Each structure stands twice: as C-alpha cells, then as structure tokens.
Image (cartoon, rainbow, N blue to C red; front, side, top):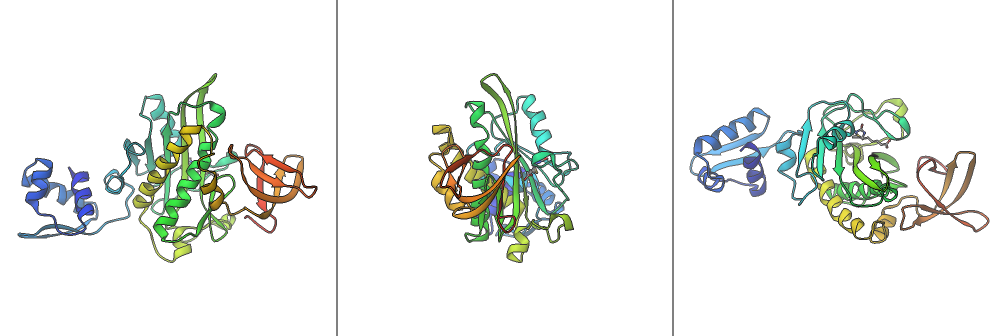
Length: 326
Ligand code: BTN
C-alpha cells in the first residue's frame, strides 16, 4: 500500500484526501494512515491537514522499490523490480534471478556494490548514497551475434534520460557506450549474456551512473557526475525511471530490425566522437583517423589518412580522442 500511496501523492503534486485514497485502493482509513506513517519513517515529509488530506513535501534520494515505482511509467522495463541496500554486483544478482526464471524486463538496483565490475575485467567503484547501479534482464528473441548492440541502445537511453533530467543537451556518447558530460565519463555499461548454439537464454545489461558524486579518487580523473556538471543534486529514482522509459522506446525499435538502422540517426546525433580525430587502439595496430559515425551494426566508421574507411567492432578495440579521453 505504501508504494501505491507514494505514487498517488507524487502524481497529484498537491493534497489528496484520505477518503479519495481509501476509495481508490479499496482500503480503510487506518491502512492509509499506516502507509503514510511508514513513508514518514523512511524519510518522506508528508503534510496532513484535516479536511484536505495528505501532501508530499519532500522525499529522500532513496533507491527503494517504492521510490522508483512512483516515477516509473513503462509497460515492461522495470515492472519487475528488485532493490538492494547493498549487494555484490547487480549484474551477478540479475544473472541469478535469470536462472530462477525472472521475467523479461526485470530490473535490479542497488544503493551500493561490493564487487562492482566494469568492462575489460576492471572493478567499478560503487560507494553508497550517490550513484546508480542497475542491471536490466532481457530475454530477446534475437541471434546472439546481435546482442552486443543492446549496449549501445542502453547508452542512448542513458544519455537521453540525463538530458531530459538536466533540461539540456549536454550528455553524449563516446563510442561504443560510455556516456559523457563535458568531456568526462558519467556512465558505463557492461553487458553479459547466456547463450546456447544460436539462441539467447538471457542478456543482462548493467549500467552505473555517477549521479550525486562530489569527489572521485585520483585515478578516476576522467570521471564526472551529474552533480559536478550541474552544481546540484538529482533524484536517482527519477533518473532510473527515465532510463527505463527511453530504453523501452529504443528497444522496441531495435527489435523490429535486430540492428540499429532505426536508431542510427539518434545515436550519431549523440556521438561525441563524430567528425573528430580519434586514436584507434587495436592490439598490434594503432592509428589515427576521422570518426564518421556508426553503421547499422554499431561499428564505428573511421576514415584513415589513405582514404580507406574501416568498420571497427567494439570487442577488443578501443577508441580515444587524439588529445584525451574523448
Ligand atoms: C564500464 O566499464 O564502463 C562498465 C561499468 C558497468 C558498471 C555497472 S554498475 C551496475 C552493474 N553491476 C556491475 O557490477 N557492473 C555494472
């Protein structure tokens, strides 16, 4: 009941009478009062005025089911939701849930991680109270070779979600899927999957977003947060819900063609490397070229000095700006 009451108060944005809540959820006044008391215990400030009802004044920046659900308006993505105060890694937990038949679109979130993992076997620093750690479980009916493109789809969703929340067009994508703000990394995604022959059992798309981080360790000098870029805090649950909204929209377009052909224009619009000199770091073969954009498979097109255009597949290859990270 707590989740429903919170969602109703947030939706209204003003006073909602106790009677209206009772009628809407077919429960007693005591049940509503108990739900409001629980929310207050969790840090929500709720005003109650006789004859007017309840009004949500302030909310904590909590990574709880109630908080995330109160912002979520998707059909499938995140509808099945599991939230942890602390866990090893949301990717690990999403994979465990997948093995236990959790449904397509299940979202796992945590306030902190003790074994957060990044790409290329790196650790992902995951302190509490300031960032988003989330993993989305999908059961796509596509060929396993096409699944790596889902990482790019999530990158687009995160960039658009950040831009909507910050009210501007400041977030972009560094190929293939790092989201950057003012030239620094604000989000990364690690996709893992379980396959057999030509079929996918499940895919887990794990994303970390630095939201209210104020300071990074020295070795993470290329990292930034929404807070550092904008100068104020953001509500993590709201950003999660926006990521799910955009991911659901883009995933539907991806599923139609099993490639990025319906998303390529939006992706290339967000691509910060576009029309810039990049350094391609391929094991045993490093070179500089002009990044033109991606193709329908998500490969980066790079024009070399001799005019030849290479199609770069993300796997082993990474790309840097000639003068720095982007
Ligand atoms: C990268 O190296 O850029 C990818 C980072 C992915 C981090 C996220 S945080 C949520 C999920 N759980 C993990 O252990 N990793 C991903």
